[in-house]
Image (tube, rainbow, N blue to C red; front, side, top):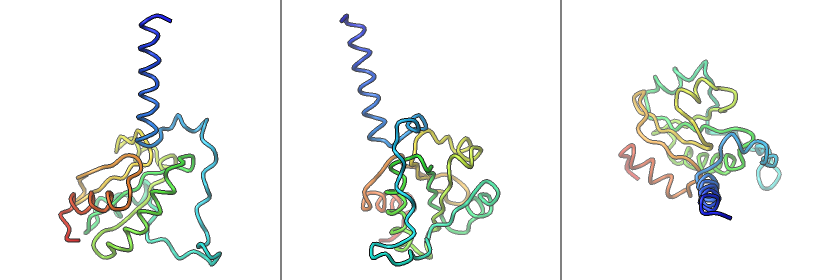
Length: 160
């Protein structure tokens, strides 16, 4: 094996590792197992409570997000993304914690390609924080609850 081939293999391995750490990309669709279904029951088998995260699409994004009177945390996700359900659970906890201070919305990336293009979504999950109609922060991939909370608090200068 020559030096150029070795460098290419190392480069591909580094790129694959970075994508795994950051989240997933649309190319993962072919190799990703079916994601767990969005939970309709809680851990005890009781009907799940109504989500505190509003599902939005291209038609209502302007009104619900851009024109919102309060800051908005936007979750871009897709059914094929194995990490997106984990992020949704974290965001539901934060939505309860910040009720009345922040709005949390969810955008199906595949069903809303214009929004995905508008926000240059390249990997999922992607969380975008919007205040006064402007993007002020974004995260790509999965962050632990405390780190995501700290990121939101810092971006919006909220009191904890």
